[in-house]
Image (cartoon, rainbow, N blue to C red; front, side):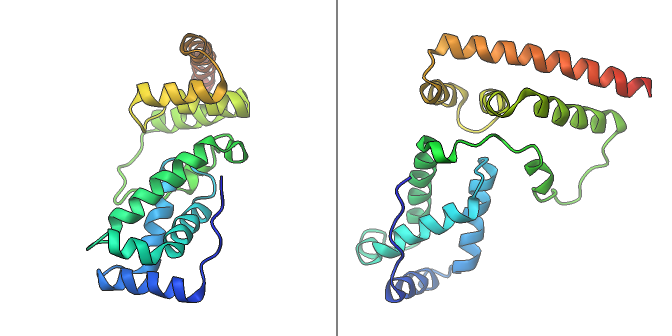
Length: 192
């Protein structure tokens, strides 16, 4: 991913003033951007949020003229571009981290989780770990939520240099392995 140069102090101050003039706070918006990247499964969400703000700060004079009113539209546009570059850059092609799920903030007032649900979650994490990094990444991205599935799968096939049919076959085989692993794991947990 192409890195933007660091903004000057003057450019950065203009960015903060622009946000403040719209009733926005830099720290709050930076945290929101990082959370958006985190929800999309990005590994270094804070670094990506920094990149968004660096790109905006460097172009602040032009952007203030273009985006009259709320700068959030500008932030979201830059966020989408940085995210697309993140997906294309092989440096960022890291497997989905199963422990990352544990680090996500808990929803407010969580419902009590049944023992069977806890078993399923534990088994899912174990089975994902057994897949290996590349297969885990493929499985999570193919069957996960996010973009509309057709678009996400087309993008995934292009990244892996596979035809749509070859990707479907690989995903189907992984799903079979996961199903088998889950059934064995849940049977073991029920025996105990």
